[in-house]
Image 1 (spheres, rainbow, N blue to C red):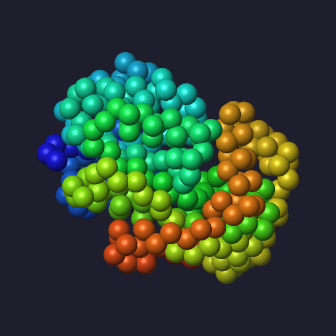
Image 2: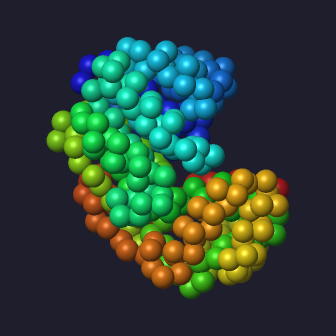
Length: 286
């Protein structure tokens, strides 16, 4: 593949790491976001940035023009993927994008209610080279969705019961995504990606306790209690429903399976939850 890769969501957890991984491999890229100035503040003034707003289709053509690759992710607030991500896929193919790497979620090929399922189906039906990454739960949730509870109350509050989770570090996902743009053998592949070990939220609380030097605990939320918790934070009902269902699935083992694929693709042991917490202690202090 010749030409740059367009990285969507470039200021978010995954998109930013993908941009950094591409830079480390010497792959040219253009970082996309709703505000190019904000993108450059996040990634550096030397980064090529372009405006792309999933809610404004008029920004699509300008963003994909001249691109040969596309790293595509679904921002959590975007529920209607048919009129957003799928349209962007069509515009990208029409503009000559050769390879699309899509960040899906584990189980999206089977779970039709997950928005990512519709994007996967569209990519496969539309044709062209595509690589689908299906990671499990992100270790970065600790520094994002769970951060306020950990920092403010030293508490993990989710409706996961005693379920175990093979948390995956998005830095490892980004490395796989960057590799995919340079390796023709990855085109057309679909990968389920997990971390190296399944741990309980009680285990995670113990890791946080050791790293932060203060007691942290896991409090299993009820389904209504968790939904109300998310609403108090201002999340829309659609996002509340999806996030609650995903966590409830952990109760019955949906996040517990450990898949060896990530280690094989990386050629090393993937980062564990201890690695993520150790590298990001400052997120939960103060």
